[in-house]
Length: 322
Image (cartoon, rainbow, N blue to C red; front, top):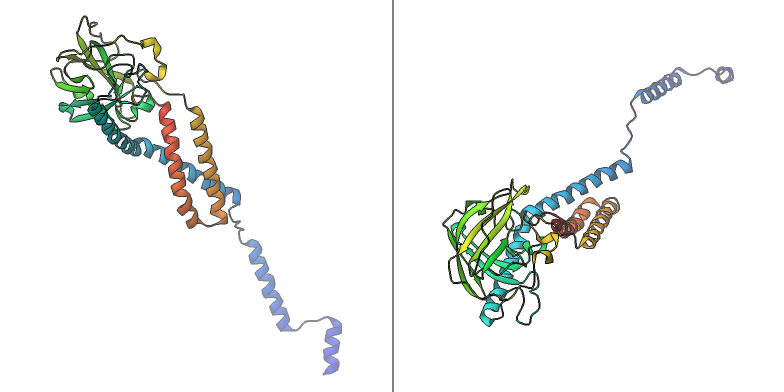
């Protein structure tokens, strides 16, 4: 027996059991070679997908800012401005023209008057200035025109959709409708005489003590303005005294004219964009190093706040009557 086994080892022959095991191993190797190889997604692909998700969040934040958050910002600003105006009227310190009592120009954004239009169920605090920044807070008074109630043509401008969309229903103001404007000069009553758009002839220039008020806003689809609407009204009450003007149409910059955009704070926009990009990159890094739940918990509010700040800066570049 021993001699037989020795002769088998020496001759290199295999037992039947070892041969079967070797065949099974060979078949398994062949199956593994034939199966398709599925590589895990690369880190670059994951980063790209996450980057697109962050961009989507940022864009959604911008849309939310202009459509929803801007309305809240406007309401908050109006509460503050109404208190400022009420205090100024009670103290007798409200502006009476283009300048303050000490002769300095009225600062843009100063609470100036209270506009009440019963037909539109509208009561709005008017601020000095008509650039995009001032019209975020409320209706703006064009600085080179007299105050409502004084001789001449006063101009008030308001947004049609964003930041309260105060003048969004201005086209519904029909001739004969009456409204009032309260300033430091008193209460001035006006009556609507008509509407005009681009190409329509304007009213005659007021003479003597005649007073007029023009309400101005944008026309076109919501958030897509394509023109300017002007509603003219004549002064019914007794005109108030007017000091000599110190500002003229040439004194204004392009940002204060209808459909103008404010480019005075591009540095602020650049800083907000840089902070937003850095926060997005930090969120991508945290996604892999810290965890998904923790990343959303920390960076979603951060990205949201930065999106609102950036959206406010972007809004300055949009038409002021938007």
